[in-house]
Image 1 (tube, rainbow, N blue to C red):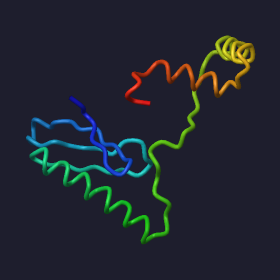
Image 2: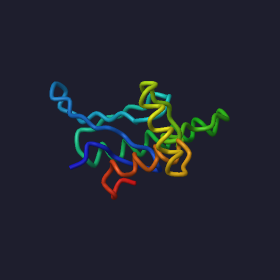
Image 3: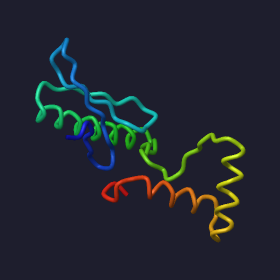
Image 4: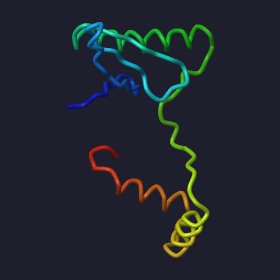
Length: 114
């Protein structure tokens, strides 16, 4: 079972609010805050789609480029020792540091997610 929904390349994390007895969704990975809710899975999905459509329409009307969830780059902080070690290993294997890290990350995920 997944706790995430997807639509047009956007993903939302879903939780259940037992106090209000509703499902609550939050769009993941963009700067703008997009939240929605519903009392059933069907309503939740409809509201998620509507939230994304409204966001894209608002961006078009204001001339804003819509945020993309995954840009293909991110920064991480690691120890200088680890940085040196993987840099040297990448060079030994004839790869750039980016290629080496990318391959290591690919190996860490189930093949269905890549």
